Image 1: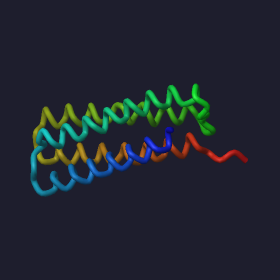
Image 2: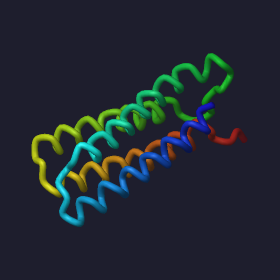
Image 3: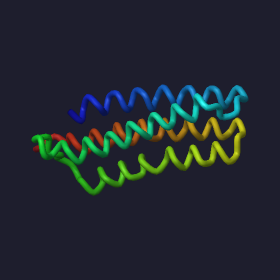
Length: 122
């Protein structure tokens, strides 16, 4: 359950991140589309939190460090709102780049969380 959703979240966050970075580098200020794309990533991160809470109850037990997993997930949940607030306050092309970098950071974090969740048992 958590693996399939992780693939979707990493793919969406990567696409959103690349879109925002490219648009920012060509001089576009944050538009509703880029901000809403990052809101979508945040919604998926919130869904990941729910899945991580429910997964152990249905038999998908984590095998890695739960503390490290929740630190990554907490950071991933904080980055999009911070980037969105900055983009709305600043409205410069660099705000669009920050939105993209934030989304790319989330893609890396979620991939790392998947590795922590599925540590092979020795």
